[in-house]
Image (cartoon, rainbow, N blue to C red; front, side, top):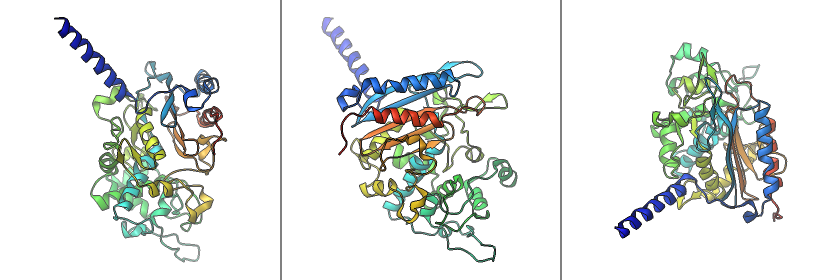
Length: 403
């Protein structure tokens, strides 16, 4: 009997231990163990709590890691204010908004490049023949946009288009092929490669190219080639109903908060699957992805990207240095303030309209994942200055000299 009881206790302990291992992607460490200051890092808590008190955001979840170890993993405030308050929890699932662009869409494109199924130099019209070029006032056509123009937001596409108007013409919901053609036929703002215009339309176009090459949506392709291999089990488009209780609400529309339904209108028009937005994830899953990038394409014995692909994606693309953009990633554009002022020129990241952000610094082997739902309940929250402050505090907490 005693032996049986001992076995049950041991099995229970093992189960708890295994649960703890899978609950977070990386081991926990004290800041000092990775040459960071606890007292400095604690200021992150101060500025986040102050922002919540000022009602700039309802709540937040943050994960900071250095040298492959988590030094801060915490939730703050509320996940929901309307119709009732609910506390934020660290394992909650956020609408990633534009973080979809680098994590799902750009990564999928680079996998196709590695597979020899596409070239960055390919013309967009090779895949979407309806893609019209820029035409100047004299009626002269510019050169055709290439895949890399889409990835760097220099294809001459408009930033966005009215989802309601598109829905009236294409149906609501509409299929991606129809929307991609609709976008392709829109008047271009500039010749490709000359002006940086941050464009959701470019990444919707990229998602359609993925579908035309593979027969899979960006959701299906990224699940098979990125999220499932990395065991990012709470990362997906259109969250399953069983995970809805974990989804952080965004804006209240027609009296109901969007819960597990994408906030972006163009993504919502497509039923939640789009190249510009639609991804949902957690701080823990994004930590896996960030560490994979710091490991130059590999995590847990699984290789997602080659080392050279990671290098090319995370440097300012040489043909459009003025853009400050890599292939899907932001390094030094007007949108890169979420990286703060202290991380170096090699650092990169992205932000999302809903209040999400990720910043990765290979020089110090550090990343910051900071997720909020600043659009809840009325799309009036503000998180831009807060992101910079959080990044600056994390960077200032690094104590060792970087060589």
